[in-house]
Image 1 (tube, helix red, strand yellow):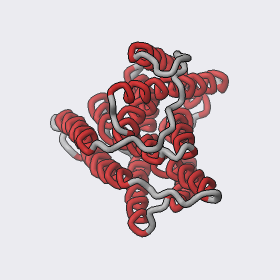
Image 2 (cartoon, rainbow, N blue to C red):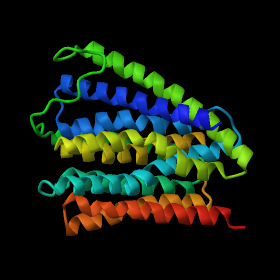
Image 3 (tube, rainbow, N blue to C red):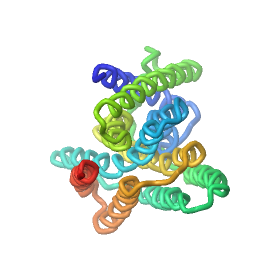
Image 4 (cartoon, rainbow, N blue to C red):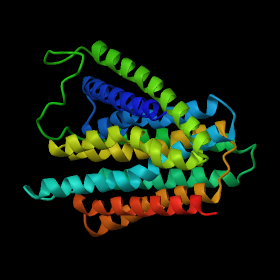
Amino acid sequence: MLILILSGMILIVLSADYFTNGVEWVGRGLGLADGAVGTLLAALGTALPETLVPVLAIVAGDSAGRVGIGLGAILGAPFMLGTLGFGVLGVSSWCIARRDAPQPVPATVARDLRFFVAALSGALLTSFLPHGLRPYAGALLILFYFGFARSVLKAGGIREGSERPVPLHFWQGERPPNVVAAAQVGIGLLGLVVGAHFFVTAVTELAVRSGVSGFLLSVLLTPVATELPEVLNSIIWLRRRQVVLAFGNVTGAMAFQASLVPALGIWLTPWSFSRLEWAVGGLSVGAALWTLFILRQRRTAPVLAVGGGIYLLAAAALVLVAVRP
């Protein structure tokens, strides 16, 4: 069982790397600025695993365990990125700042986080609506995201730095043809689907055998596999001083997870929460508000390291609540 979980995680990570690498070159072929590539294209690529995991978990069966895993993946991804993900970026920025000037947090981070707070709060409050109105709320979330994407594209911007992106894995030349980049994106997507299927199957079986809540396992375990690509890619971009790409990759994925992914949950699940599920959603919103607050006080990236501590304390509290008789 653990071998199947690890296999799914490894396939997800490798496939996301190929997908994101291809998406960045597709973005360059389209002439998009770093803000749009990071917040929209790169974030879309690395957000696909956490989208596929809940969808496959929910549509593959109608058991309560699978629904719990689906909700855990939906709520756990923004919780992990908004706390531990920012914490890793903060620590990485601090390490880089030891030999260079502290890196400022791009203004686009506050924009993305404000959207995240509004969208995820609206998604959570949708659970109080009558069942007949919930599908319309899901549609509004999708429209809200497309409005956000349109504003990102209109904001434009220029490419930062002069360094070239990581060479396309499927091409050895200077500039790959767009069709080759698109083919790599498609193969990466296929790997994400297969890896997510393995992972969901293994986690479901583990939850049944251990008696542990599928939701809790999904909240704490699934993001380790699905969010690792965002964090790793962002660290690479930080080292290359491409700060807009690094932070846009994370906050753009959070925006995606707060709107499009919950919309799927609204349509495919009863979308009603236990106290534990409310706690995870509330922690995600609270962590984003806290990040907005500290960024108003000091706009250098190392202050975000506190997010890692928030994640560890919250995860420990969730485990204690879940196992308490």
